[in-house]
Length: 170
Ligand code: PRP
Image (cartoon, rainbow, N blue to C red):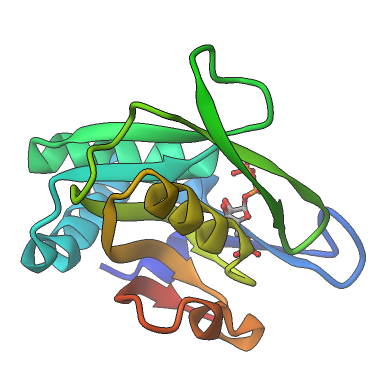
């Protein structure tokens, strides 16, 4: 499947100089969406994860179906103040702006094998912070899967030492 043909590139969004990779054309195409999730599952299976963690919001659209297809649970990492129970938090930077990410304190078990999933690896800030949250809970990141990797931004370098897998590279 040519996933790239289902990804729309929008120049100068949300600000000048940023080339936005819009996955909504892929998501609305049932065959392409399913093929993308199946491909990510194939990448993830050898890592033998026990649970999937994905950051809000596009990480849900990728991580939750990956978890479902693998018969695993899904844990949301959310932007500041959205989770109702006790949380741990980390401040994070992203391609444009900064914020705080939260995870429920009881979401993961110590030693649990975690797959991190998101739509896009850009600077790596979001996933570095997501990994910090997972590790604060004592769980172990066995790998990170992405639909898209923006290689120029060198997010992979920020994730050195972790297994980083992506379907489409720009
Ligand atoms: C986007 C994207 C990734 C992150 C990648 O999310 O979905 O999570 O940025 O950038 P990074 O590697 O530089 O951190 P965004 O924060 O825009 O939120 P959204 O999913 O709610 O749109």
